[in-house]
Length: 342
Image 1 (tube, rainbow, N blue to C red):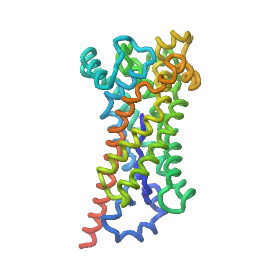
Image 2: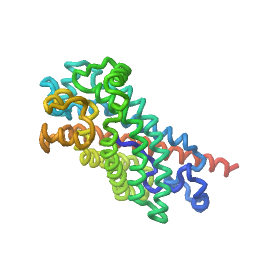
Image 3: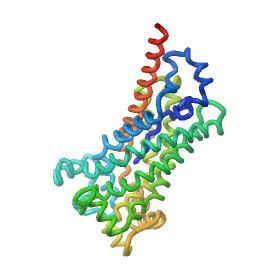
Image 4: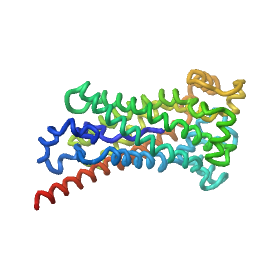
């Protein structure tokens, strides 16, 4: 997931890319003062917002990265006896004790390289799509359907960047990974499997992330309506809503994540036991393989680690972006106040 951070998911009226379309609405609300937190300053450039989204996205992916490494290993269908874990804490403890302190961070570099541009592009696409769809489905106010559809559209572009990074990351996270580092993994995969290997799981990733994002946005919006109905800057509500949204969407989409992991890692032991020659491709084949090797329960391997990873990750990402939005709004209000006092 990873999820991809998107700001303004709760009915923001004036993203910079469409500020000129709503000047009259903003002018009618200029005298609202500090209460106008939902409307971002129209002068802020799209690049600034994209940068904020990218920073928040990188933090989301990196802060809980060791748990993501555990999740990848726990989703192994036929793990090495030395890599069989009973829980997240026990797994982290054993990995550090037997493989070194920094082993859970292996693959973090490619994740950071991919997350920045992926989240920036996601943000730009989401803002445009959400604004257009909100006017289509609902003349004014917030539209959960528009939020979900806009996030799904933006996911297509986001995953086009993140999918290769996910493949390399998960290959490096696996137990006894044969790759010396990032570029060794990229070169070896390209020579042995061709460039298509980096997009072998793209359709599965999209199939997973589109419902993930839709559930995530809608859950966050519903929680905000209950915890923060006035839509003020409220760190506690942003953390709680983000954490719950991440947990629900992560748990629901775990079966697809297991299939994605199998396609990304091409787990040799599992494929050999199924007498799969060459490389496993396609979501349908991945589903059949997972079921034959572990039954229905196999589709929820690593669900605990996935939820534990997503809850704080999404909470952190939302908190970072909501603070950034609040900070920019306050700065603008202070500048306007200083001009008015002259």
